[in-house]
Image 1 (cartoon, rainbow, N blue to C red):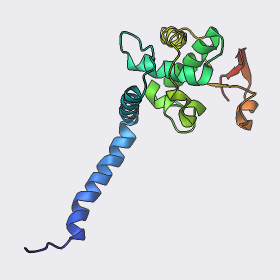
Image 2 (image 1 turned 45 degrees about the vertical axis):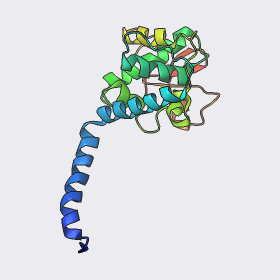
Image 3 (image 1 turned 180 degrees about the vertical axis):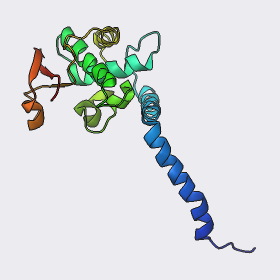
Length: 179
């Protein structure tokens, strides 16, 4: 049997276009990749967990994403504070400073501690109000009057956040319009 030598030139012909295509897709379809990653993580999570996530009957993935973010960032906060956290995400979607999709905003690098530390994937308590808060925020409710940032001063060490003018405080969170 004759052995074939590995040809670097031939491999380069295939590898470089695939690398360029991958780079193009990751830049131009960031929100689609975020949805795919979320979907894959959610499928694995669902298979591993026997705890109900109280997913809405309509199966709206964006409500699910927003509810998980609210659960991770504002679990234990008053209902108005949960709606406010959801509103910040939607305000960012509308702002040219941030990605223009809910998934893009949520998965933007280093923006939300709950995504980074795994709280985003914590099962949602069946009695939680986070789905209702997500739906209310998606319906236009905004107790922050347009805030783009929020933080808990007891938990954050980010000096830049402390430098922002607080527009409103709800529960333990401070909300800000930004610079």
